[in-house]
Amino acid sequence: MARFTPAISRLVSELSRLPGIGGKSAQRLAFHLLSLPQDKVDALAEAMVEARRTTILCSACCNLTDQDPCEICTSRSRDRSTVCVVENPRDVAAMERMREYRGLYHVLHGAISPMQGVGPEQVRLKELLARLREDDGITEVILATNPTVEGEATAMYIARLLKPSGIRTTRIAHGLPVGGDLEYADDVTLSRAMEGRREI
Amino acid sequence: MARFTPAISRLVSELSRLPGIGGKSAQRLAFHLLSLPQDKVDALAEAMVEARRTTILCSACCNLTDQDPCEICTSRSRDRSTVCVVENPRDVAAMERMREYRGLYHVLHGAISPMQGVGPEQVRLKELLARLREDDGITEVILATNPTVEGEATAMYIARLLKPSGIRTTRIAHGLPVGGDLEYADDVTLSRAMEGRREI
Image (tube, rainbow over all chains, first blue to last red; front, side):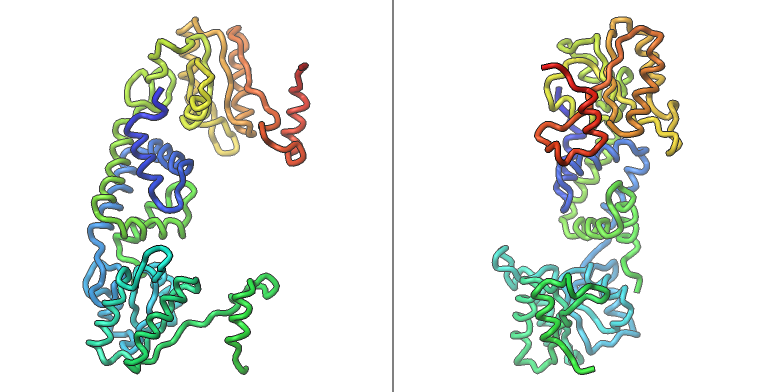
């Protein structure tokens, strides 16, 4: 017996290509989808196709948007002198959830990682440099790439590139997460927390 | 700022309805889909719609199929005297992977669970009883529902129903999983393993 029908096998194989979904979860998901009424499956499929179709990159900040320039870039209530550089659109969502940052963003869509063959040309860095050249109202660039090896390397790389421009370049702080337990902090975080200590 | 565009929000909410996919994973999946080329997203969406459209329940065994009766029910090489009752189509796939069982199946599509409001009418039990009434070539029913409270209850319920029919009704064995460690077995499994001990 073929274990599944061809259509089911194809669905399982398509689903298992998604990140974080292994063979078993793909099977589970597939059988779940098959147990739904057709119109629910159609709605999910349509939501995917539609979201992909209507979503473009903002020509200014490279964030995902359905209008160009995006809502943040065109907003009159944002501080246009500060640009926060993040790795991906999820990071913008996280920053916005905080509701404290009122500047603009720049989304790199990745981090430089020579190990994985991602060079400066594979992220949206050219766009950032062009933007800084053209808009002399920008006075600070906050590097908010992830506190990972790749994120650090990317931040250092950008900082070095911006040095000659005289634009203030800052890096978000590393330290103990609020609510975290010092006892359970890893060595690197702890050493960064000590390094970044400030007078109170 | 609206955190996401309406199309992205809709996609995230559709995805988060899938089993085992919480809010965070739904966001991650959505942004992954948005980073794919349109044709890959279309392919996944089409695979879903297509699998759902072409998949029906076998009128004999209630397993998922694209032909009725299904491949197993029509196969000449299967032993038509034995029916193995399982909770869902994934269980059929697992049994078939083993390549030892040559009988037929019956898929209940669930287990009786009064706690969750699933009564005998909510699973495909009526179909099993009709099948046993009509086909007097069936001499053994193997109850292979899961070794959970619901699976046990379902097995007991079916066994009681079949008692008057004189059909041999068996339950798959419970015990230590092969390759498992006695030391780490839970009490119930261990007690079942002792209970089910056999002469060697």
